Length: 183
Image (cartoon, rainbow, N blue to C red; front, side, top):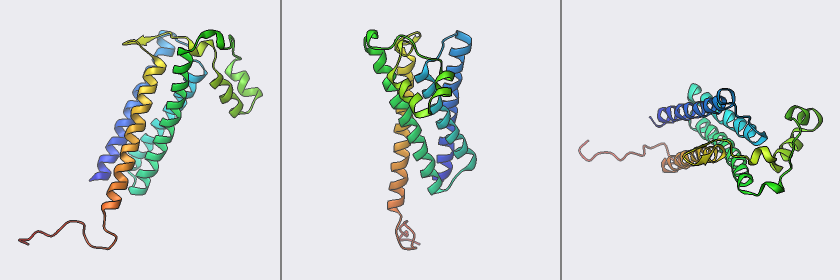
């Protein structure tokens, strides 16, 4: 029964991630907000997290697979948290410390290795520091940070739960349930 519960939980995380991805595409294409480099990195982490949860919900893995999928989920959530945190910090910094222009992302990827491109994105530009949309006085990176932290917390809780269940299981072949006295 715990594995079925884990499978449905993976599906719920997939649905939440798909909804957040849908909102990000809606804000880009319907509202007209242009994502910066850090926003695109966050979207990539979210797509990876959503894909992992979709694969886990379709496959319905055993205990080892469940732990592996939650580890990947925590890893992608941690990466998204770091990226969103950096963008929130850029939004709180004075704008005069940031570069005013950034090369086009396709030009960056064409002329540099991908790790240099990520490093360049983390330095930040004026585009990353602008707050162009808020909901309940929270910007898009702040909402993204909250989502990634909640998904990381859920993943860590599930990993700890799996470890607790494994530790409670006896090492011998006997059942972990005590026999009833009247049986």
